[in-house]
Length: 294
Image (cartoon, rainbow, N blue to C red):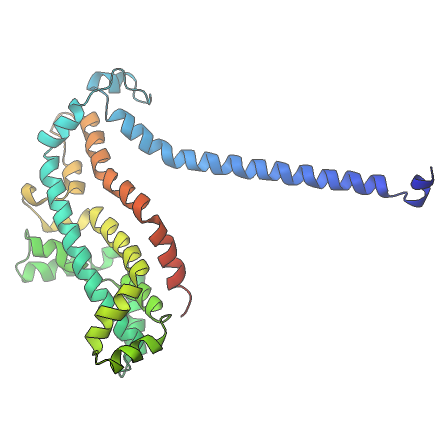
């Protein structure tokens, strides 16, 4: 009785506290449920594609939305690699992606290092001009790029496919932000030891920029691996097509072998999944470190 008289609002406060806890718990449950639903909506199309890649044509048209092949078969992968020529297309895509990856990393890193450390007239204006190209959609420059390539005789050639990807404004920006965070004392020490501009860049800056380089390398590879429109318009010989164009043309006049198309799509997406799994630490670390300084 004395406790009730001395603290008449104690019961109400306890009820409010319990109500607040219940509200937070309900909110947490709702948020997690929405996140799970969102994750499932993103994963399900891939699982559906993977399941249909093991179905026969009859099973696919009988149970198109089932995720359990009845029975599973590997003949679709054989069809994709032989009839669909996926082996040729995969080799082309690997060659294109590797060439663009190596050259763009070299050019972007050199340009970024110059913008971060070399004082030359018009540096900031030129850098802003480079950044301005990020606002231009690819469709705007597609026709001029094709006309230039055609004028240089690069249509239906390996060089014509990879040359437009040899430099990228995003890569220059990303690496410049990273180089700005590296202390100048390291470069000064290297110059005292007799290292020049390129030697400092190669032996000091590049090893320190490994996280950002890996991050950029992943983006470059994914962009080139998934490129479709440019190879489609610059190439005319099917033997030079990448996988993206090859899958789109994997059909005949009367019908499409959908299970084989799904098998080819699974083969194409597998390297991307593996790349993300192996490089996710560098991707997160590189992006966070590269955005520390403007």
